[in-house]
Figure (tube, rainbow, N blue to C red):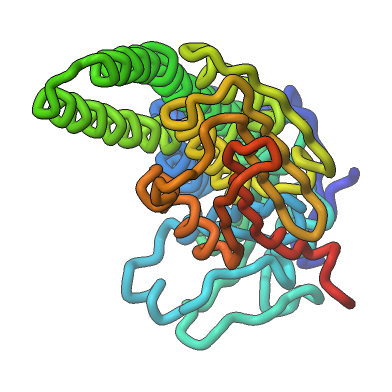
Length: 400
């Protein structure tokens, strides 16, 4: 696009990266390269943003500089990094710009903008009380992976003459390099997050597959010994050891549960229930069956899915440890609420107090979620646990 006279107040200049570098002299190019190297030294995104706006301000000879970061929609500013303003001035200004006026023009049309006098520009929005006066303006977008990440805003050329095409060329080149650095830093942060999640998953898996299973098997062996011993004192001591093992397993499972948060995208609640139950019954002679109905993976939010899995784990663990069952049926139904029904063919409740079977957690968890939990006798004489909680209302379910 042709360049307008500096007196018209508003300038758009479209230049390629090669043209921008050709437009500067060796001294300017040296300053540009030094600025790019300095930006590249940033180890995290905030550091890179501060280095970028500081470098652009110095490179263009501006009194004030800012870098506005766009939101995911690319329509509003979510962050605003400044240079040239002290803490007192920032406090007097108050709220940071959201992207209106001339700043909004650059968001809508992400091309470099030069303005000789902000006070007469038709898109001016005005300054809030306490804002220092500003005259000339240079705005340049920052692209990262072919998407506008944010915009550089420079105000008040120190020499008072206004920003030039050379200033614009330097800042455009700097913004191009900054976009690459920003993209690399964001990619590095995502990789670090993925590694952290992977490490948490690995630790949780090791605890679950090795430590818990060994403690679980040891507890079953001690139960067998306690049943065969004729010494009441020995039986009581063994029962205490078994209870301690149960409590240890419970604590480790809580740790595993926390390590597995946040839930990885694509994880299936249905499949996790199947895998968990099959591992629980693998150390005992119990056959597991599953019945699922409703949108378990799509309709149950992650927070409720965590409670759902913990409930199934608790109920099936009690079946394996105490019911002397050969078969357990796990049913999960999702409709207006979530229903979990665990049925076994074991010895049933008999005269055993169900509150002593480790099921208190199920009652308290259901009550916390506004639901109910009941423990009764199944048609086959075994035990049936029913746990029902309401399904949280989604935006799509709310009346307009």
